[in-house]
Length: 79
Image 1 (cartoon, rainbow, N blue to C red):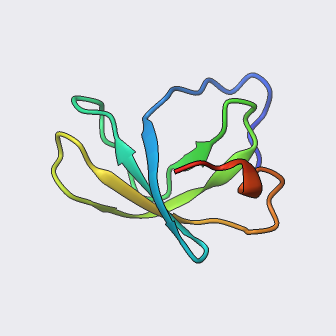
Image 2 (image 1 turned 135 degrees about the vertical axis):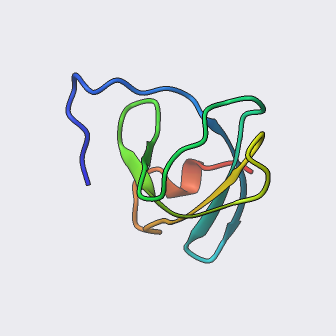
């Protein structure tokens, strides 16, 4: 997965937890929920992963995705 330089991005929430290669992101309250398969990335547009499960309340959903532990940002993620 890759985003092009002109692709617009927006903040959607914060990483809540990491278990093995799974990351759970909690969405911002009142934000527009994402769809399954949405691509999540860092501010530098390097891809974090694609959502494969969305759960919780619509007003503040949780997004689950798989993450490659070999990703250059893996050791920089703070929960």
